[in-house]
Image 1: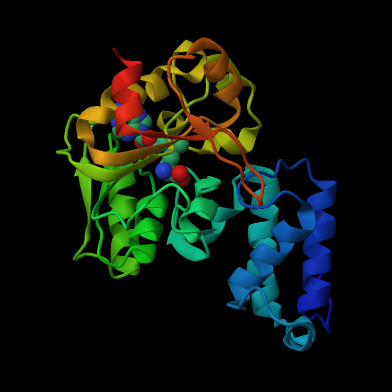
Image 2: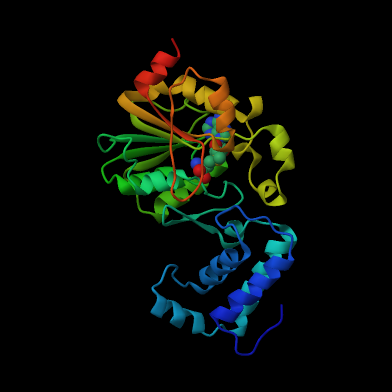
Length: 299
Ligand SMILES: C[S@@+](CC[C@H](N)C(=O)[O-])C[C@H]1O[C@@H](n2cnc3c(N)ncnc32)[C@H](O)[C@@H]1O
């Protein structure tokens, strides 16, 4: 990628995009194509806001990019190609439910469709705003913190088995100024938490060993602890389904992501009367089930 004397945001994005298109990249950590990934990089480095109206978008496109700015952008663009790092790690930031979160290689890059449910305040699943919420397998804390921000009175626990992940989650708690209501809990699934939660929301590991081995290089930059689960990916989700009732309040709800393993679960474990959620923005394999249904399923 060469330096163009009159480079502006538009030409800068175009050059980065061309570079990405000629590299063997895999998208799936917040964007799904070279152009969006280039916009994400250029706008983040330049501190430009996303989602403008047409007039301000045109003004942003014409903004001059200095030689120093271009050099910084170009260095990151090159690293994206040579190191196959997800862009979020290079930028130290990912967006989830319309909010920025610090991320690095200690946590998975946020991408759960649960974001859409959070923005909709979990409607129509919850009759009332929850008082206590557990974000189990929290990683960066994105799900629990975003949930805390839509339910201003909720106390939220962010639980993870990884101390490294909890350090990132703590950073994000402070970034969003929710220290008074949100805390991290070191816990192997439910072992370190204390019910009753009105809402347990969880994006657990659900990828089998064979599938992990076959994933594109970008996924191998993420902590394997965040992906790997035995029994065709279903071991950890099943443990959660079998234990969650004990930690739910009467009327409490479990929201659990199984991703693309959901048809396998649906076929094998018919005793759980789950509701599969639909997402306008794409994504699949998120179930909801109430405490009473969980208790009945285990009888
Ligand atoms: C798929 S990542 C989800 C991270 C985050 N919730 C998100 O949606 O981006 C799964 C997380 O579960 C954690 N984890 C794995 N096994 C666990 C266990 N037995 N108990 C608690 N957390 C666990 C991992 O450390 C990882 O942070």
